[in-house]
Image (cartoon, rainbow, N blue to C red; front, side, top):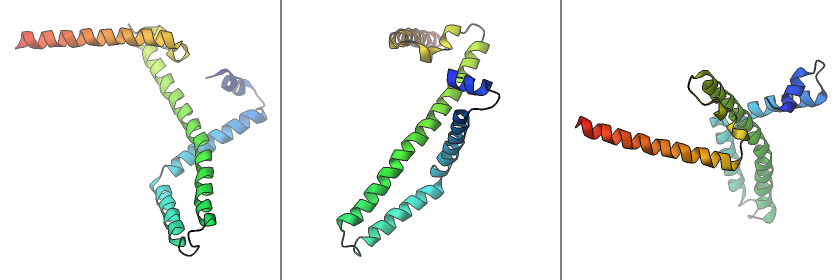
Length: 149
């Protein structure tokens, strides 16, 4: 939990900001479920078909084109924030689950728990270490397979 969320959770009378964050979280979760549904996709296709069919009526005018361009731009702009909020929440949940697994496994390196806070250089070194381990593992597997043959 980040500092802002912890502060919101610790306040007895919840601040207006915490309430707004909660409302946005609930709204974005519900919106993500709704717009990710087959019904929403069918509705979007229907809107495009109706718009295209109206083209001859409006003589394919600039105003006719502006309607779909403006509508899709507004929807895309708003969806960026909803999607980002949902992805941030999901990534944090996955990160916490992985942290718990690392913490619970004996022999696991607990320094891996907060990797998201390390520098890019640290992550690159760790990635190279895992690549070496993977290469050694592959070589060992190859030797074992040859010995079994």
